[in-house]
Image (cartoon, rainbow, N blue to C red; front, top):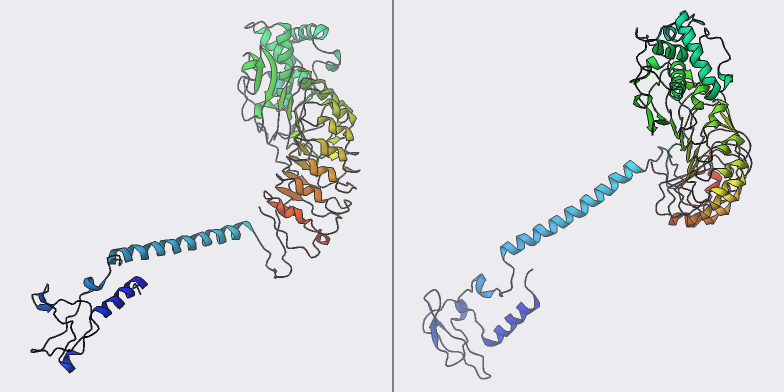
Length: 517
């Protein structure tokens, strides 16, 4: 198999130079006349062959001559592969074959893990098990935990917060000090409406006032009225939120500077941030309205803290707020309306799963939030429609999550297409009655669009969505959309999930739709 054309050409040329007759049978060999004998490597005498002439004659052999058998090395051309080369070539082909086989195996395993087909699949109609909707779901309430109080806490705190009594009579000397502090603060630093109840009543503000009086009567440190104001407001927050049961409460309710209290951040000795996520996940308690007298707050992060009650209307006094995160709580009430426009510095409002009782209405005042990059109100109760004035946030708004409330109505405003920086648009789980605006095809940075679980969304899928080259998730499950899937959607190379479950009227004669986890 290793002989090539050049080799056989050489054999043919050799045949023209000499020929052997059967020495055994004829006892003669045809040689060119005049050939001279010579000795080969084996020491045997041989005759040198010369090119044959036209007139050749058969020369009798005087003695029996055995034809010489040529060795393998003598008949092999110089370029004939050696045994080592053959082994290397075989090894090379084997490694290439193994590489191809391994590549196919990896691809097959990846497909098995990434694409999950239902057991009832067939070649004509493949049913796809899709990933769940991206809209977050309300978290289940966590059990309340009673934490015993430490003995070093103030007496009024122990009686009112730990023991749950409704009133506590301060000692006379503490009562006088408390009244003096109150009068000092009411005159210049706090509104009188905060101090409507008798000093002996067990409310968070009175508990904090009693603590200030006890601390001042011990005579260790004297505080300025401004310091007393901040300590009183944070003390009321500590009492209302049952701070003795927090996971971390370093320096709270002590005479340490408030800027050294856990979770408190200051700039130039001014409290600008309260950052305590996941610090009291099992203590069901409300937010006191006194907290929102800290008007210099820029950051309020209280996610996953089992906050109950209503969102106080005083929340909108914090006009310097830049970042708010109170996700995953259990608020039973509160309203977010046109007052939201007062928070003109707001960059992120994250209230996903803050509580089903929290009601929001988006109004035209949203146009005042020129720094708003994230608006997340998933699973809160939305009332009304999405205002067209949202287009004023064209260069800042990146994330909109209004999914899961179940009550947001109206149409999808075409002005959403002007939000050039939008990356996530989640409007699923509502009562929107609209077609899909073709203007959404202008959202060139969009990565996720969720319009699912809006049964009154109708019409067809606009081909303009094929321009969304960064789109990864398109969720249109449980809608009233009709028609076929635009072929341009197959050009979206970054697509990971196309969810049309329970919207089978979209399929028609189109190929199966895949949805990756």
